[in-house]
Amino acid sequence: MKRIRLLLIGFLVVQAGNAQQVVSLYNSKAPGSEKWSWTEKAKYYSMMQDTIVYNVSQPTLTVYLPDSSVANGTAVIICPGGAFHQLSIGSEGSWVAKWLNKKGVTAFVLRYRLVRSLTDDPVKETFSKMNDKAKLDKENDSVVTMAIADGKKAIEFVRTHAAEYRINPKRIGIMGFSAGGTVTMGVGYTYNESNRPDFLAPIYFYRNALGPQSVPKDAPPIFICAASDDQLGFATHSSNLYNEWLAAGKSAELHMFSKGGHGFGMHRQGLPSDKWIESFGEWLNVLGLLKNKE
Image (tube, rainbow, N blue to C red):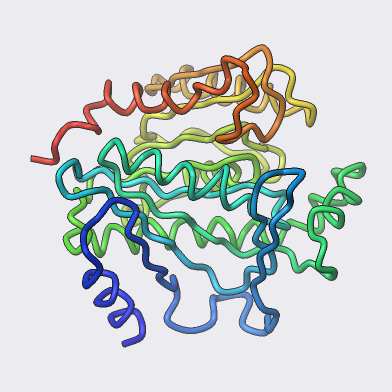
């Protein structure tokens, strides 16, 4: 009943661009984290010019609706990054959603489950762990599995409610940044019929947390983007992924910028990487996903 009420409230909102509602992905406690009792929080960091969300224990989707005059029936689930400890909810979430809305795409920003932060400075806490990636991966391991499950649940939810959101159930994709890209590819490697994404877009994604995987026989088209000077060393994760998709005979597009670093998202640095999202939009258009749903 709670989910139904949330949906009804959302559809009472005038169908203007960027109208929002928040939907819980699970009717009760999310499987695997039933004993989690901490509360989700958000903090703005001026140095990052972004809001960071942390301590997510109850996964949700924030819905961004395009203006009905431009809506085309395509949907994208957006997974922000943050090392599975936090979410860059602006530059890798809501700002992306609003850009997609202008293209007629319905966007859903996923807040997936994260490692619990023990302080109210999640960025400092996360950075203190970055020097030992193997230890960080071990700490993240169980949460990665949960986050991927949240990604699959998000696709199932959007597909089940496609008619209510005026979405074509065969035009639902998932994209993610860094750890969110790990979620994206965790879904992209292991989906079933109900949660198969129709397209994928991992942006400077992290591969090591997934372990060995193979390209599915019915793998969807993929858009891959990163920077060669990624300071975390993730550039080859993207280039290798592109080669995997090509070797399997699947549709793939790769954008590897010489400069841009890690975590550029929707921030502007005065570099060609600033225009990555325009390339993403062009790719969607080539696939016919920006044309009217009819």
